[in-house]
Length: 432
Length: 143
Image 1 (cartoon, chains in turn orange, purple):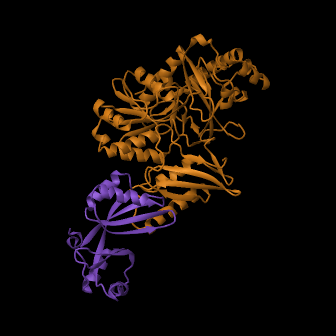
Image 2 (tube, chains in turn blue, purple; image 1 turned 60 degrees about the horizontal axis):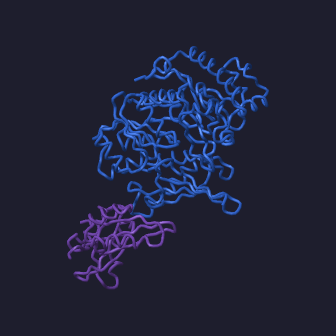
Image 3 (cartoon, chains in turn red, cyan; image 1 turned 180 degrees about the horizontal axis):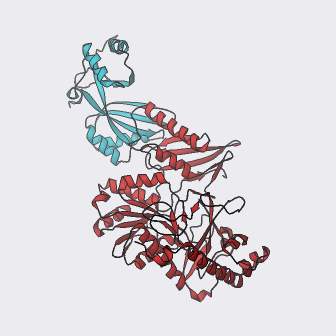
């Protein structure tokens, strides 16, 4: 089901005309209302009137997470605070969070793009949808909640945690879809197995998964073990929250809601704009955000985009799945390493669950990286030789993918902390 | 012909072996024989117990990675040359032993060996042909 055919299937030419008209308006608005943008545009020698085509976007300066942090809490508002109806905050890893604001119009648009997301995944009005994203300042919980209501479905507002109760309500309420992070869904699959609940015997058919990078291999593992269609969704609070882009049932890239969020992919080192299919950092410009629009916001998420039309009929650009973050990237002895690379290796080795952790230490002048992998029953052997062969295999495959010799340590199950929200995959002790 | 053996994955950490034996004790499971194989990082605890199915279940429920495999128990004469004779038979047949450990069976006082072979069926045939007594379950597990 396509929620809003007029916009989601709009011919490219019409869409681009709409984008340009909205871009001009937002550039003028931030220049007039927000001292930060006026200063940065002036420093770059740009006036709002100099944006005449979509290509002119490239001349505008970027906005970074730090710019948002520096303007904490509401320094980037373009409306009087009395018009703000809701705020959210990003889960800042250090210090104060980034606060983003929504007017009534913003909440309306958020509901719209979330309804598109859910419809894209195969949810329909009248369905029962369990929402296991955390409720609160984090945009996941209330974002999905609003979208489910807009779709005309019934929401079970579980928030995260309490896995046994989650499984109980999936069964008893007949939930057709669940929304949560991929790592939490995997942990729910484990809980269901322990409780001897088979998802195919329940009404659960769709998992709407996002808020952390995951891999195609992890998707296959999730779908094989649960029998549920795993759909990737994407968003970030600085842009609106979830609802920025989402996969349809073709599972071939995430459709960007381009009438609201204008995407570019750049080389994170030089800032140069890259073409279709080239991987780099994705950057978004708000086209309709009312309270806190952002211009060329650097997401730090790594992916590529394509403008080819999807089989489902939607015309918007599609992003590839996010394979990592520029700030997730570890530099080990001069080599760039993304946790997602490690994950794909572990998933490719038959039976390996993605319960792993990367530990980085400094031994003298050298970085030392160790991958800890939990030994489950499928990996276990009663022969030392069998386990040593497993270790060697993981080590060799990691070398093949990373080009780096790293240590591998087999650990007992449940040694690595399970996440309710975002998985902590990396412990970097080099700064200590 | 084969005897169930429970193997448990253990990290080399203080107290992990005690955790396993406590779980077994709480469930009134008796250990008949055991061996530990280890590297510097991890170990495999192998156990012959009186109630193998229960042992597997309670260890799994306690969060251990455990598995059941089948091993061969062979009676050995408790005198000089007893073990040498059995190994000679295996060597001549070019059969590789993956691992082995010994114990004394309580009820009869006989010495016995637990063997894990790569080529298990070949090994059983060879041992039988040489007239070596392969213990049935009942011989070990009588209480």
